[in-house]
Image (cartoon, rainbow, N blue to C red; front, side, top):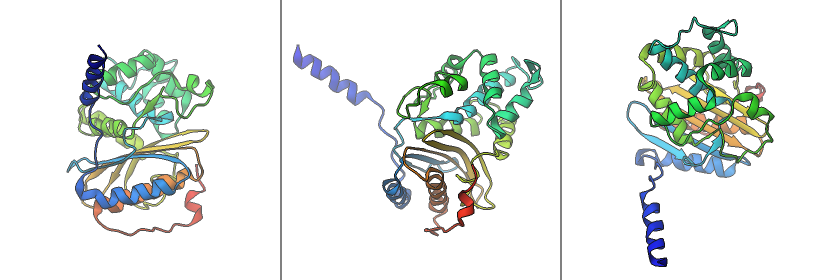
Length: 282
């Protein structure tokens, strides 16, 4: 009986999906990011994917981190999916406000009230979670609306409302490839993310002039940033960088994003020195 139990456990372990490994061509970038993460006082999770070549790199890519406001990308994607299928319109009004206006406020200014109005209209957090699961996005879970999340006791290791870095990058990939929403909706979403006013000291801080579409997430002790970086050759890199605990989290995100940019272009310009003012924003 005991042998049978051991065999069952062994088969269950072997059946688990293998953790995503970094592409051999990006071994030096993986080493650089690992060194940066080890030298940071924060717990750092990173994943990046070239949407043209499929090359990928990850550090703690399978570890769940709180999403905070980065979940708003998923909220927007579900709403736009329903627009694509004729169930909703961006001109619909929710409590007297157009969905288009709520979408802009949610993604550009990270407006929590606008987000919760959209979540409620979609059927609550479970509707978003179930839609992601039905479309094969695993490793990402939505359990509460923003008001509930902010009112709960802070636990940065709570698996509720969390995502692994690779799961978030998978969501971004599916959005970009128009697997979850149609091309017109994808372009609309990316345009709003390009206008994001939060987190100027994160992914964008050390990439002056580089096109970036992103969404930040922030809680006490947590700083996240996810989105797309456009390379000189036109390739887009889907990126998710999560940091919790420690200090200087925005700078850690900025330095990781710069390393990713350099690593995917095969141009090593590290260390990149930026004025302290680059990290003074929120």
